[in-house]
Image (tube, rainbow, N blue to C red):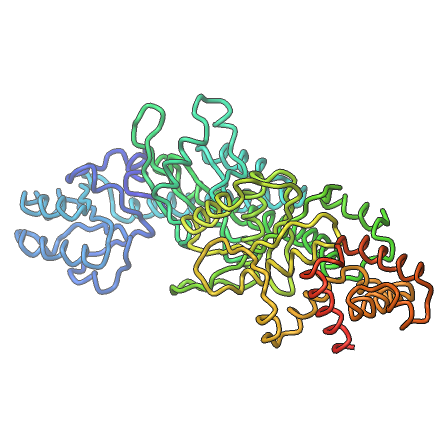
Length: 536
């Protein structure tokens, strides 16, 4: 649509005279109606411009005022009157009323016929609409070609900025800049200060367009429009346009709409690629956590595979599980969307503070875990800050469960189990630490996971690798402990030589890294062996 102002700015209509204030010219015009009927308000449409000689209102200014009021009620944009024919003047009260409701009254000069004038006006309006349609098609074709050619968000933003003559910024759900137009490279105005001001007022949980006033480097008020862009999940990206009040509509809106659509496709494609990589990474870590380790714990093949995902050779591995606390308000998110947004949050905002830290996502349980690969002294404070930041930004509450450190990749599963158990603690701590269960607690538990963990934690690879030698070691260890650690009695009961028993017990102590003479160790081992026999 065009405005009355744009219409009157054309040379063809320069002899028309505005009788009301300038601010009455900003209404849109969809069509032109010519009438001499006093009840035309019942038959016209909003955004129409009415042309008349007002012959029925000759010598009746009060009726003319009522006529204008009826037109304003139905949203008519303005009234063009040929005053020299029947109505010789417009009463000042009528002009004041029209100004108060921003209703344009325009005088048609002598010599202009209403038929020719309406025809010329409609020709201009329809021609303008045709131009807009052709321009929209050109824009659509241009942006479609950019998408087909694999253009990046940065290229799209530069094209949009060049079209609408305004700076553009693209941000992700965490208010991080994905890209921006060249304006910010060419001027001394970096993106950061603008984004800081926007984030203070911006509700990034809404799906509506927002308009926010900020200040530029000269402290002058700067208007911004923020358009939500949906990719795949419930969490949106946002296109920020500076100086939207200076844009030429509807051309600018065509370009913005097309760029939003193309950016949505690009972001969706990128998310799908990233999700595919997550699934591949998840497959490796699931095998590490829940698969059977090789007979040779130092077999480099599996470890070398882990190098592709950031696994390093160290003596420190520790699992931190992230749990999403159920939402207590009306805002509901898809479970998978929540899992992936937390994964992305930990990757982008938490891991950079943890040297060599890795994040992996289990799509079956929609859970996210951090794997530390070196000791972080202030880990609890970092995790608490991360939890507070994501709540401030997206109103999502998260808790962390910390397992204990282990010194070998094949023991990471133990730390993972401890992280699971830490999250089961019934408290509101943001960071929960694993606390080993006492023997009575273990006996009272009915879940197999706790029992299996205790067995594996105590007997380690003696039960992880199923071979004859391990079975012999386990049998020897059991008889040895039952005989209070006496080599001779054990050898006699098993009909073996003393040296054989001594060798096997030393082998067990090496594998388990324990001293079997220690009373607590002996008790734990005997209990683990008993539970193992019970399970078998």
